Image (cartoon, rainbow, N blue to C red):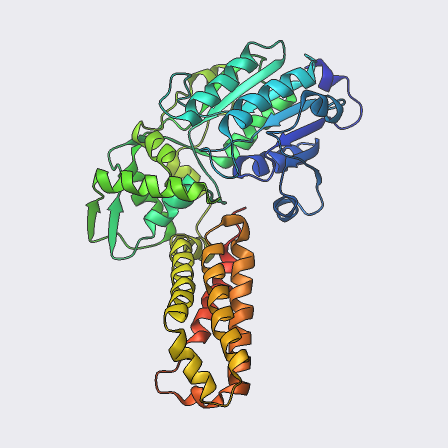
Length: 440
């Protein structure tokens, strides 16, 4: 590619979605290959965690205009688009991310010397039943119809040291205790190592792959989803299940609907209906086009797992992944019920305080004010963007409750039902949930 071969300074690359699973791997691989790399994302905290010393452009890709990109990409040699979303929700608009952003980038680049590497997905089609697949396909089509120097890579199920979304759920399913719960066990699935995807991007960025290449990135071997889950369980070092059962389809669909609803509260559950529908259709690709283009072969599933041996951190993550939503639900129910019961039984609570020589005004404020705070915290934790603050509030309110109770009603510490003592596990659970909320 002439733009790279004539450049005396390190070639510049920009990675959209630079702190995502694939984007962060591409960012690191391009840096190692000698590129000056800028990552793009909308969350400065997530960007800092992925690469604290890196060069970051913090912006919302879905809202950036062609003029914005013309300014930011003026001297960029390679653009890697690893951004994307699974389903519409409180934080995501698929049409804006997969189509509008591509249109703005094409217009903003307006330079055939800039190589555009698009990370898409196998199986995309403009008439696909899911918005994820159809919007991805329309974005790919717009790029292919443009005059740009483009390459489109479509990986199958990506496995790497890090886990996010479907790969995180795969590990969690493999770590289920006692019994295996199989979802769509006969679905055919192919995988690709995350490092192989990043290496393919580097090959394309260096100009080793011809322009206008459209290729699947995948290992050639195909596995049923049940077999894949079993291999992941072996990789984690857990003994095989003695018993396994298939989850009924009506329950799977109901789970997807519930997860869809939570998406509008900001939670990007890998159990949303789009993910389940994509899995039901199978995740299969054909490595022929990539090999023909000169791409390095992708590792088999067994080799991928051998190259990244599981550690205790992997086992912790796998077990805790499904416990996080349980913890959030438990805290929400506990605080909501605490507030509602406090309002319904306010007379009893007032009697407890006033019989201990606490003024009526302070007692009324404590009972009704405390109940409303409890309800607010129980509702707030259900919103993804406010969940961390809600957990912090729960810890603070609990400590304030214990401190005030110790001063005003110290005898309650000796109550045989332990109302003060039982607050301590709640504080611990809120602190643990707060520590587990990071998803990048």
